[in-house]
Amino acid sequence: MSDLVHTASGRVRVDYHHFLIVDPQGPVSEEELDLSHTGLIAFSDGQAEVHAGIHSGYAGVTVATHLGAPDADSGPWQEIVEVSVHAPSGELLVSALMDDMEEELPSLAAAGPGEYRLRLHARGRDTAVDLTTQDITEHYLIQSWAAPSAPLQLLRTSDNYGAQQRSAAAPSTPVTSSRPRGQSAREHDILHRSLHNDES
Image (cartoon, one colour):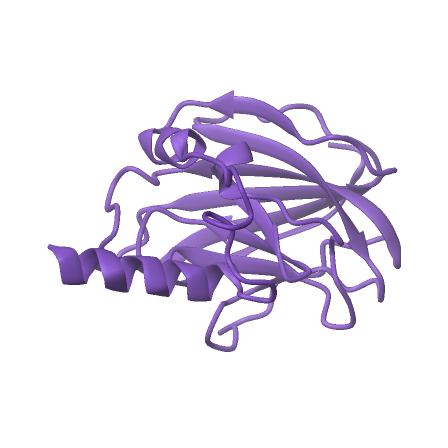
């Protein structure tokens, strides 16, 4: 592919169904985006949270930076979502939620500070839902290129895990449904699962 700048693959730690895409120096989005909109990625507290089917373990992640929008990948991807993000410092990094990365993947912001488009691909999220596993059962491809901000796009939606996330009711009123200001999606997830486990 002629516009490919670089690509690399590695294992990324997943905890509480998440790994992150962050700029260490500032928010990648000023907006809050609930998972019910995409089933794959959410924005909370200035960071992008990629949602995995497994509760904890490792995912196989490939990053690929491009000069312009790449052709659609024809691989066996079950979910594909495009979103816009901002890289204030020009570092847009895949990051583990709770641990340091074993081997850091290249920055997704190949053109330096500015606006970027991310196309996230996922497969295997239905394989070990809610489990902790040392085997890599899920794979992700994250393509990026510099581009003005644009609305999110759902390009493919075919796994059960994503359908469940999208079917969750979006917050209806701030009094009864929204999480407290400043509470991260991870904290919300921990609290929700703790309450759920206590009831079962």
